Image 1 (cartoon, rainbow, N blue to C red):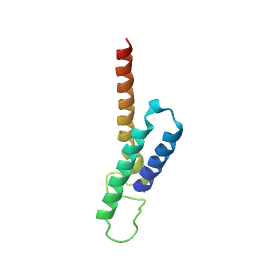
Image 2 (image 1 turned 180 degrees about the vertical axis):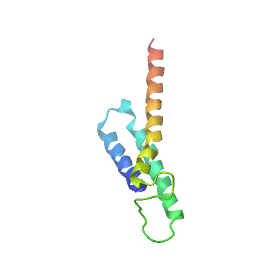
Image 3 (image 1 turned 90 degrees about the vertical axis):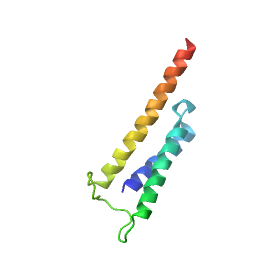
Image 4 (image 1 turned 45 degrees about the vertical axis):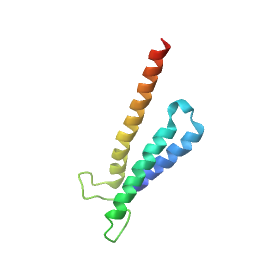
Length: 96
């Protein structure tokens, strides 16, 4: 399910990129989320052993697949937000 969660987030960021102002850099967020989705898809393909391809539960520390997907989105969004804050700070320094 974490594949579906990241895919939905990537599609939403791509759709938002068409409508949001350029200052929010939704293109960067979209690329980051599409990269996350591609990595999860490759992980699913390489680790596939038969049975259900999309599972609701995991064998790891986080048992719920949707929660795992959301937890994977948190660092991506945090890095994107930190990038936005840093570029705004740099622009404010340049202005005076």
